[in-house]
Image (cartoon, rainbow, N blue to C red; front, side, top):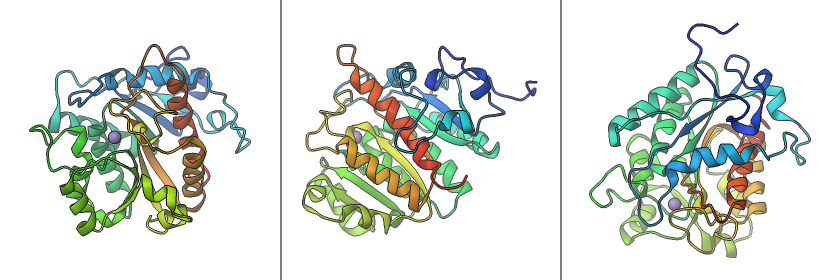
Amino acid sequence: MKARSEPTVLGKKQNFLGLKSEFSSYHTSRIVVLPVPYEHTVSYGAGTGQGPRAILDASRYVEFYDEELETELCKKVGVATLPPLNLGKSSGERAMTRIYEAVRKLLADGKFVGVLGGEHTISQAPIKAHLEKYPGLSVIHFDAHADLRESYEGSKYSHACIMARVCEFMDPSRIVQVGIRALSPEEAQFIRTSGITTLYAHQIREMAGWIPSILSKLTQDVYVTFDVDGLDPSVMPSTGTPEPNGLFWAETMKVLRLIGEQKNIVGFDVVEFAPNKTVQHPDYAAAKLTYKLMNYAWLSPK
Ligand SMILES: [Mn+2]
């Protein structure tokens, strides 16, 4: 029986992993995927508004069974997919409030939320909602860009400023950035003085033990914000601002797995994916990354 207040969810042909209703209804699913096709501030290549649909389409080819963790998580805990959040023409603060309200409602229902962007701007909304529920929250931020600009091209709600917005409501010492390799002198200065932890891509290449150094900076409850351009363009070319010398797949999985084992991943977003019709393997990589994040999150009891 469908409760009256229960949100509509997408069916097998449209939802994450192509799950039948037995494993994807709202009330029986612990995990909820929230697609947010928000695209308002583009720097280089466009298309993040198409990101959620492309990830959902590719996810139907991802195996339910995780070969590494030896489990079919989606059948054990259920994964419901909401229809894309319709923000109409709203942008900036108004849109962020709408996204925040949507995530807060899901958290109040006891759901584990994975947001699919859309541009990175949106991440401030789920981070804020999670911080309310988990006051000790820390954030791990995978990205090529520091995203710490005070404003960009006249907007405080540009994708280039997302972590600056987060630093307005969260102590920078609880934020860890990984894979950074493109930023301004002002952002570099903020990194030197604010208490934020930033692991530049070139440091990762030279530094043994970079993963333990990250883990030591995270609190128990961790939110993962994953800009797909943190990955190397050879793995992930489908993004607006690709940068060489990014993270490779195996090392990314290793760090996420260790976070899942040693901490409590409480929510995540995958953002800045901009599908390209001529190269489709990145669609699948983004879908697999999304399912891996769910699997690693469940390494700690929920
Ligand atoms: Mn980026």
